[in-house]
Length: 111
Length: 117
Image 1 (tube, helix red, strand yellow):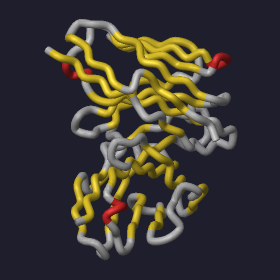
Image 2 (cartoon, rainbow over the protein chains, first blue to last red):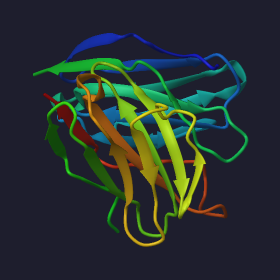
Image 3 (cartoon, rainbow over the protein chains, first blue to last red):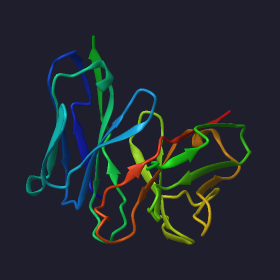
């Protein structure tokens, strides 16, 4: 099956710093989402981005589907950005959205 | 517009008891997915349901686990005779029916955390 690798696995930043999180996947995908799981365990949709670039405030994401990777950019990080960031991909063409999650990047932002 | 609603948020059961987790999809959504997150891991697909139909249950354990999405009411994930290894966060997600609004994006609830003593 498709493999989803995220890097780095862990990241510690000082407040205000910028960072780039990467998601590599081993096969073509039809759907791709980025999520933030906060320290309370809630899963928050960040981007639905099977291709192209999107921006939402301090966050932006780019997916290059032909090269099988996606990037999540966090600028001017804040302590509330702490948590785990998951990339999830769906390779199916059947309309069943069986997303495969990566193992996540654990981010800690220090005040 | 309310999001995906799950309850209970936290559930504690003793080994051998039954656990029932409920999920109400977003308004207008008719497709429900259940995912499980074991400690320190990513989420894993369990089952995909539409009203009164199980479409894909390839991620469900073969025994003790069942899911339903009745014509009326929430979707229910049922775990019988729970064991300690069932301790996890169970997330529900929903998507709209096939059509213009169905982009492939899933919307997740806040999860139900099951602890088996």
